[in-house]
Picture 1 (cartoon, rainbow, N blue to C red):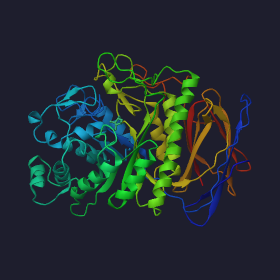
Picture 2 (cartoon, rainbow, N blue to C red):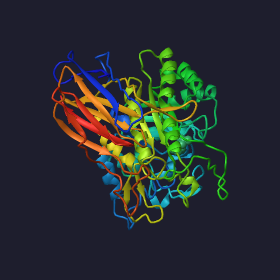
Picture 3 (tube, rainbow, N blue to C red):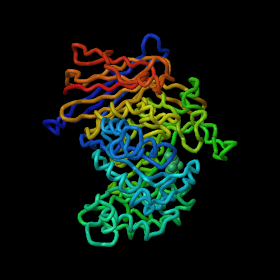
Picture 4 (cartoon, rainbow, N blue to C red):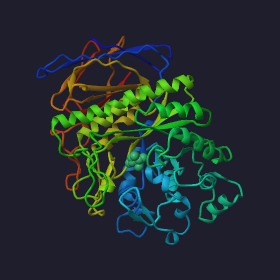
Length: 542
Ligand code: AHR
């Protein structure tokens, strides 16, 4: 029994503390002893915000068009133009927040071209992503109505890079004003009487890159200016989000906090797990292909390289938190991790500008361990949006690129998000983990286990991911002073072959299964055997 985690029982007595012990030991086949220590010192742990499980939808490849929106006249079954199969998958996921319209696209998007009768809307060339011609049939109304229909909180990214202050100001007025102003009347003329009361509003995206290639010293002035005219209307208060750092760029964070902390509620951070961005260009389109490797074909070394890269997110959060604490010890400004996930070379034969990639158990364990990291920092990290929800990068859902009428498949990452609903708005149970690490190279090591625990309505949920590509491991769980209660629910996501994935023709190759490989012992402790490359979630009655 090596690990110890006191958890607060929030059901009856806030002062009562449980201690959650977990010990991880190797199986007989493992070559080293593994120990996991989980340990809590404070009782006042934050509640995990639902927004940690946020999604991102950009006008990129087949995310919006064909992925979400097919139009009312499409032969693909749809509800008012939104494809029915994708809507159903969104509903089951209970998406808390959805970011739109970009990404890089946001800083070239002119919202007025996407309102009014669809047949009159101006076409646009999506310069960022494959020069696709879009008909603007999915605009402000289509996005906000989708969110409203599904109970999703919308998060709009405004255009600072190529848009004017006036354009942004009018957009906010159009969406949120209930007065007789010109923009509110225009919205009414376009069929929407009441404002949508959008809360989350981003002032630019990646302003250091595709959003204008600015220096932070310049962007902070622009932020203050644009933000001034993005007004609050009625009772609604905008949650104002500044464009944040590229990965661990703490200079960006430092200047942003120094100059804008009183004008913003949150600041974004972006980080992608990429092996090597590279410099090679696609011979046809000229788009950089990089050496990111394949989503489907990788050896063990390449598996660990990406897993290791993804775990850098914790170091990045820590560094930004240290800078923010200097200016904002009361943590009034939130980190919005509004782009994260894996990024590989596109699937062969697909448009390199559309970022269409497959998704295996490697992505699933990366999703789980990244969420485990976010859970630890929710005193500062209030939102995270994986990139992206349909057909782009580490997506939840894939539609058939070649034959869009062929339904959709749910990726292993989708199933992780579904399993992690157990932690949504639960009280975080902190932990320390000591376990065997696998050496990736001279500098990097991957711990074989990642874990999260939370308490909600008298139920303790524990997630354990096995990042070991080859071996199962045994985790011993001990609730200090209390016996493990009945297991209410236990699920596992795994596959014999780590490369297994869901595809058209084999849509259920990877999906959650009931999990039985745990034993509650007489002394109230528990052992859980987690298969290689797997994610397990157990919910116990306290
Ligand atoms: O998610 C794909 C792109 O990655 C986004 O458009 C951009 O913000 C980031 O560089």
